[in-house]
Length: 415
Image 1 (cartoon, rainbow, N blue to C red):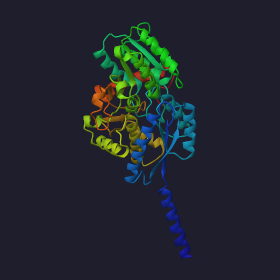
Image 2 (cartoon, rainbow, N blue to C red):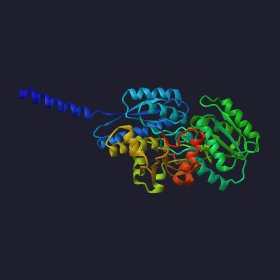
Image 3 (cartoon, rainbow, N blue to C red):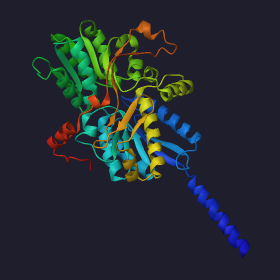
């Protein structure tokens, strides 16, 4: 009897250890296909590197991490279904995406399933504005933050110019255009016209029509509120029409992947913004950031983009919150994240408590001439940082945020 009792006790102990070592699943809801698929690939790479590093350090709460991923194709309805699939697999948290419509819709469903959702590339003001909620966190900057840093630079370098806007017709495009119009004083559509193109599913003819009208205008600045492959397609028409020879081209949210797809010759001189580039860690003296660039470069033989950095940072920040909270419970993690300040891949950042916006420095960047790009060993030194703005200056204030919520008839606090 004693031997049986001892055996059962041993078995119980082994079972408990096995359960404690059961992997924690992180769910990546990202565009493996569609117009933003290159951004999705970068997110996958960044997430896998972070998970491997954390597992080498012992995992989280004594358990290893594993990644489960689903293709959103940048379509909200598909992303929502992915949330259910990942939740049914037992995912502890969800993250990813390169479309604000995806982040908002998937974040809403994640809340219904009791899971945190971290948006990677979701620049719409609505993500942490009128559609903000307690279970949704945004790692990148908002459209308003981009507009403030870009607006300051444009006001200084191109004062009094006439603008023409070509905008993807969905939440990111519309809030980005409205924000940039406000910061540049180009609200008058008579003086500064604009056209919308469908998203997703815009055709070449849509871009051709919009850009032909831009060419016929007297505008001096062409703002392409487009992203991913959509921006690349538009830029090819811009070159065919010679618009980049007589107009300053502005793409409010640039990424390394976009320049790679289009080629530095086509993108030369384009102005935009980035929350991070691989040169930033050295610029700001971030040893941890420089180590990330080195590790990513050695593993994938490319420099990390802001998309990769965002996914990498989210995994680390979720893991850090879980360790501090000593829990995987979403409510406990929200408390650990709200108001938390940290430095990881650049200077100080903070998960702001009232809107769950990540407050961080935002950079206005301009694509370098091809000859300069080619001097780099990887030929990926694309961006010159021409201006930067501290996160507290760039992000909307509490009063501005509450006014936006009130106008949309939303509660003055996250629900």
